[in-house]
Image 1 (tube, rainbow, N blue to C red):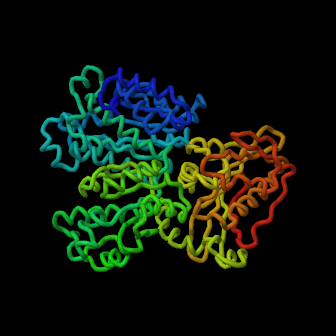
Image 2 (cartoon, rainbow, N blue to C red):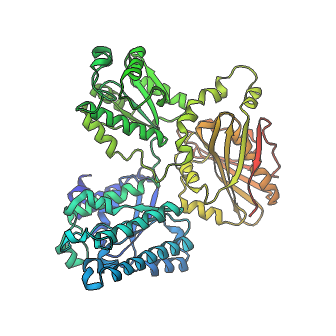
Image 3 (cartoon, rainbow, N blue to C red):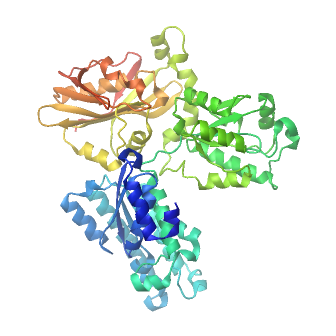
Length: 598
């Protein structure tokens, strides 16, 4: 971080050399990013590579020829090399793409300026269409355009619906609309970044000298911002936030001050705790599980939830509650077991320096969000953290709390007696569907974050999945599950690709969400795959188990499914199934197949 913030290219390059000496598994996945721009970003490249490397990733940013957006996209498509990138970024600004906005009266204000804005909107749509036709598997990050910093008469610029500021707003609104309606298109919101940074991010002298508008501080800020926006491509968000009650959700200690002595409301300092609760409730609705860890008497804690008039969070907004006098790290380990999550899925929020330090030392996998007992610092930590960043919120995310609340009811391990009868009582219905545009975001998310029931734990990007789908004879299936309690969405997937022309199919990825373990969905998905393989005359099936610290529960899955050992070493076990035979669907799950042969 010192090398990034120093703005010294020498320090940045030295830090990059040190990072390159690390083992590949320490450096993170490869992140190959194309950057297309209308202004010179060459000076930004070293600090951007360093910022991306700190995600962590094996960062490989590269710049396209300056101001050559459409031609570059078309040329890359003709060369057949578009699959080499994990993301493509387009950065532009009004000064280059709509210079008339700087001098509206010299360019026929308002009619001609409005017409030029329309032309620019059409160009943006054409660029996005060109990218989607030629590189559909590569995520596109489309930058918004900051307001021009150096503009005469800014007072007038804000007065007219066809004025310069309105023109920028129209362009940015179009970019938001395209991202909303276009699969695989994301917004790199430079307009909001520039607004936060203020005029300090620009340097007019450097702009005139080198067609590069960024100050040294602006280069650092932009590099860090781009790296954060790319982070969700390779780093899954934290799934759960464990938090304290006293001096966190409210001011004061309920067991000592009593409910009437707690501070929560619309006046300082209770308004800070009220805002904290609102931020937490928003996280809960975005699919982050809230976990209550409190050293308290449960009756006191319940009374606060039931009696404080300004409580935004409710008792049932917490997926799990541990209110006792045990060490919080012990309670969190128990919570992780109950939820079926790894410790690296959790973030932690607590006003106690002691509790945070103990958690940090005993469970280094858990992310500590706040650094002090100050409630305002806690609130800022929630504002600033990237631990819960995501490009989108899926239906599965929004109902995750309800799914985990029903986990005990659905959990076969908690059932005593006839297991199959219990599973039948859940009235499960599995829908098998093709992996494609309609479910691609969910598929890539699952590939990026599923750890326990994951045979290979390969973290494929959207582009890599698209490449596999394009391979003739590949099988790419997702399983959507519902039961009598509700719809759980897509909870399992399998990707298999052909190898050679002898009828061999290789299972690349096979995984099930931890929310659905123990219910036989893996057998249902395998049965669906076997039927598809039979229709495609697949004669030989190869698969692999790659052990990790978290996926030992599937170590014997392929043995149970009847595959034979091909090869075994410390890093993997390879399997073979020949001939490939149709497997029966589990009797306790009804099947709905919506796949179509390609």
